[in-house]
Length: 196
Image 1 (cartoon, rainbow, N blue to C red):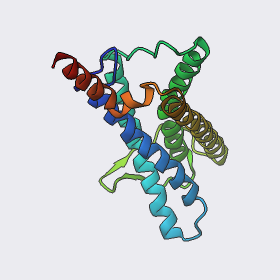
Image 2 (spheres, rainbow, N blue to C red):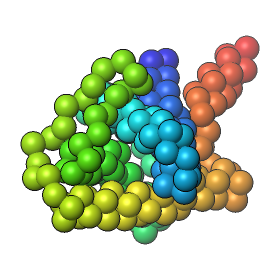
Image 3 (tube, rainbow, N blue to C red):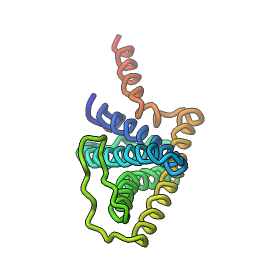
Image 4 (tube, rainbow, N blue to C red):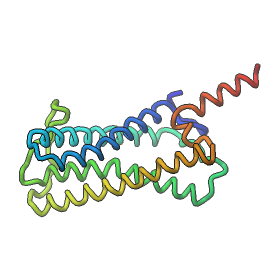
């Protein structure tokens, strides 16, 4: 099943979700490591990989948003309270914004830095800088913006993961299973059992 339906997510949405999630978590770890190494050559390489994966997240998120707009969203479980629904939708909205704002502020940081180090996306293509003011003050602003947005999105992502695990292990509903692709397979197997 490629497309979403009212009960579960389709394969395309599931792949977008997990690929972006893995890259996003890797970016947080890479961002932490690259500013703490004193080896200049290694630091340059880590920065380029960090920027490359940032551009990849930006591109994948754009395609994911278009796919999201063209597909129905599965219904929330019936036993979810209004507060849970509000918290879930707020977290999803913040994470969607973060997938655009964090890479864009990183791009702005690279573009405004007086060092003007080119961004080599996966050593294949040079990404042009954004048309921004180049100064130490601008670099400081975008550095702080990028860092705080990354910290905020990491916190919201951790809350999102905790909520998914809570639904799976405590409430034992289909919230996590349907993003793993298990929900539809379980439902199809149950329908086959009923027919037989």
